[in-house]
Amino acid sequence: MKLLITGGAGFIGSHLLQLVAAQKNEYEAVVLDNLSSGCKENVPEGIRLVQGDIRSPKLEQLFAAERFEAVIHLAGQTMVPYSLEHPQEDCDVNLMGLLNVLECCRKYGVQSIVFSSSAAVYGDNPHIPLKETEQLQPTSFYGLTKMASEHYLRIYHELYHMHTAVLRFANVYGERQGAGGEGGVVSIFCKLLAQGKPVTVFGDGSQTRDFVYAGDVAMALLAAVRLQGYNTINISTRQETSLKQLLAAFEAAVGSSINVSYAPAREGDIYRSVLDNEACGRLLRFVPQMPLTEGVRRTYHDYAQQYKRGI
Ligand SMILES: NC(=O)c1ccc[n+]([C@@H]2O[C@H](COP(=O)([O-])OP(=O)(O)OC[C@H]3O[C@@H](n4cnc5c(N)ncnc54)[C@H](O)[C@@H]3O)[C@@H](O)[C@H]2O)c1
View 1 (cartoon, rainbow, N blue to C red):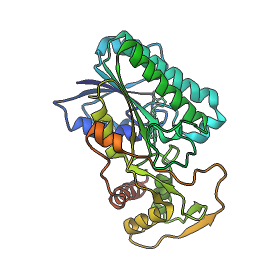
View 2: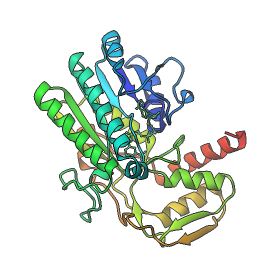
View 3: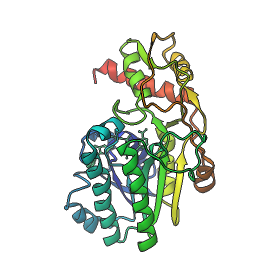
View 4: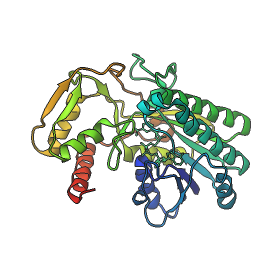
C-alpha cells in the first residue's frame, strides 16, 4: 500500500515509521514534514522525506506524482497553550492545512484517510471513561480545530465516499517526545530526571490521565488505514493513572526515589481524564498493551542516553 504520512518526522510519526519500515513488503511510505518540530533523524533509511508544508499549493504536485492509496495525517500545530496565544495560526495549520490535504485526496482518488484527533475535543467532561458518543465541548482552540477537523472528515466521507477514520488519542508518551506537545508531563519528567533535577507536580498528585504508549498509537494508526466508512475511535488504555502512580513508575525506572516538589494546581487543568476503548478493540481488533512501568522505563532510558550523548 502506498502511504503518505504527514508530520511523520515528529514524535508519534517516528514510532509509526518504525512500524512501516519493518513491513516493507506491505507498505511504501513517503513522509511530508516541514520539520518545524520534527527532525530528519526520525525518518528511517529507505523512507523518503519530502520537506514541505501541508498548506503549500505545491502539495498537489506530490499527490499527482505519487498516487497515494492512503494518507495518515499527523502534521499540525500540537500545543494547547500555543493555540490560546495564536488562535489564527492554530486554525491556519490545523484547518487550512487539513483542507489542502483533503482536497488533494479528493482530486487524486485517495481511498483512505486517518486523522490524529485528541481527547481535547471532549473538554472537561465528568462522564468518565469517556465514550466516543459523548458531547464534544472543547475548552481550547486546539480542541476546537480538532473537532472541526473531525467534521470535515465526516463530510468528505459523506460527499466523496472516502474512508475516513478519526483517532482520538489520550495522553501519548514514549521515546522521542518533545516537551511542548500534548502529553508533555512524561517527557518533562524524563528531561528533568535525566539531568538529576527535581520535578514539580501541580496540585496534590491525585489528578489522573490516561497515558498511552506511542508504539501502541502507531499500531492503531496503521490498522485504521484498512477501515471502511467513517469511524471515530478513542486510542487509550482505559486506565486512570494518577501523577503519584506515574511518579512511582519513574522511581522504578530511575532506580531511586525522586525529589518532588508540589505547587498549587493550575487553573483550567482537567482533574480526571480517561477514555473508553471498547470501539478500539471492536474495530481495530487490538487495544493498547504497553504496561506503564515498561513504557516509562523505555522512555526514561532513551532520554537518559540522549542526555549523556549531549543531545
Ligand atoms: N502527543 C500527544 O499526546 C497527542 C495527543 C493527541 C493528539 N495528538 C496529535 O497527533 C499528531 C502528532 O503529534 P506529535 O505528538 O507527534 O507532535 P509532533 O510535533 O512531534 O509532530 C508533528 C509533526 O508535524 C510537523 N508539522 C507541523 N506543522 C506542519 C506543517 N504546517 N506542514 C508540515 N508538517 C508540519 C512537525 O514538524 C512534526 O514533525 C498531531 O496532530 C497532534 O495534534 C498528539
